[in-house]
Length: 93
Image (cartoon, rainbow, N blue to C red; front, side):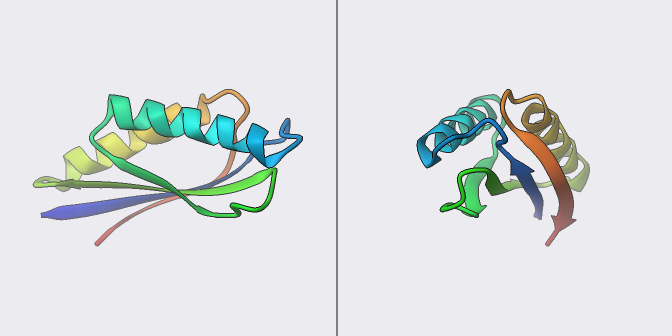
């Protein structure tokens, strides 16, 4: 069993409130959950209206498959309107 973790930090520069930020983040989370078999959660900066930290986790029997899904998820996040990705990291446990 292979567990992959994609850590993403980003900015939501057009956000004027936490409600605006959460709208962008929730949209990205729904896209990832619907398109991939991954778990997604906002794990940092919940009280900051322009910063976010997301954790995306995938589990599978082959590390290459998990890594491929995480990289595709990163592409979705990078193409999410209103979200500017500033840091990424993929690790396996």
